[in-house]
Length: 577
Ligand code: DON
View 1 (cartoon, protein in one colour):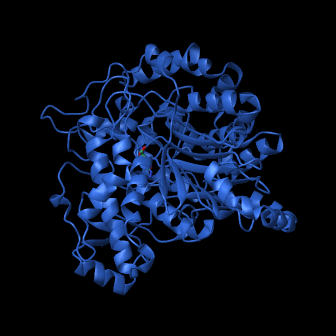
View 2 (view 1 turned 90 degrees about the horizontal axis):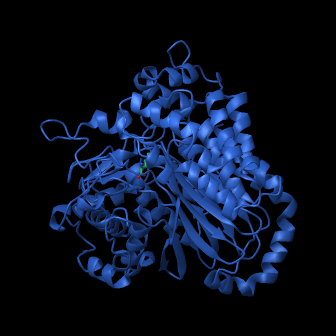
View 3 (view 1 turned 135 degrees about the vertical axis):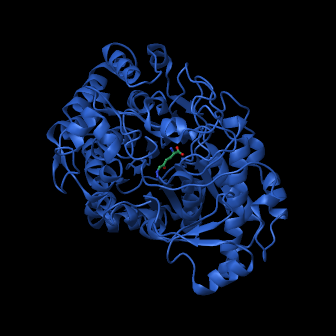
């Protein structure tokens, strides 16, 4: 079942039984070292590897590469490449993302920023109509909506600098899947139905993903020979084969024929960038998360800093959730005001993640009253989704990858560049296309995230490691503007001792400053909690949809267990948000 727990659990379960006794003994013997391990990042070796991804065939691709002697970074190449084939709704070679890495050998944490980049011909007002209003169609469904892709550069960098196997070996499972085909599953079918109009406009996409112009039946085999060929070019020629030469020419020419503004110079200039992750501390745990141009890490660390001043465990459950909502409100406000591409705008990372700053934010929180968002100074935001993908990997040396990869909306623009098998992202919509005007996720922003040639658009991606005395959580999710709050709840759940399966399945609630409402999934609040939160002044909206497709790996130092779990929302059949 695509996206189901089995996608993440197979490997862990298969090996766990055989190793349980060994693991327990090792864990017991090593017990005194845990605090040291957590504090100094000198990892103990996990008993076995684990992979949680949104599709079992992608997980299997990663397992194959681990089995061939690859490490977590090689497996990440294999999983990401396989996801471009079997989950084209979420990520692809035409998209980008953020990959958080931890190398066990030297404890190094690094983030690969493979975010798409605005083409040199982009202009600040390129998505405004004659009346100066945002043209939503142009910003999300035209070739202009596509930034210069980053994922191929990230995969090549992962393989060459961090992996053990050649790029070609790690791409091999994806190439096989693209050529041999894979069966249509419910979530893909749902995405095709949603994007039918767009896919019909694009002859290559229609030929591959539709049957006589219609939505394919479940089980229909999808073969992608052009994508297989594109992957082969990357495998044999490395990143330059994608960003320069005949393939780059074909991509650029194809996009320009569709009305886009990509240039070969844009392609030649693109690089994946290694950046310092954002690091924070909460209740003795070390939080490592994505840095700008992803907003997740700053928002997560700031929210935890705000919450650190409350004794959450002693609060009644409604007030505890109220405090979390108020933290979410404040960090999303700051996201809208301050965050953007750090190579273009000064992002005050140190200030926004400092406990002193959070002290100030906390002082405006009353524990018996919602703060109206309008009472906070500044601009604002809102949003949803499961397009985009996340996977989490731990290998048996303790190397870790948390990767959130995206085309933005389902299939990105839905436009496929002829002859390449590559879908165009519509990530340009993650820029603030007009100050204060909401994007697809009702997120707003201002100057810091305005369009500038060569700039990378702000993302909500929050690939994260949480390291505590208990062990390590490797986590992240799609979900547009909901992502940050989801990872915050996951972090709190992990520190409260919950398992990976509990973390990915627990009901969610969300606040993003604007609109000034609390969205919640059925079951997130009891009747009493709802009454109390309403009495505090919160406007509560029960969501008809559940959101996210979280992928988590937990390595528990105490029991020695390694657990991988995939969000049940991705398996429920149909589309999850
Ligand atoms: O990078 C971002 O913030 C968005 N492009 C992510 C989109 C997303 O998660 C869609 N899925 N639900």
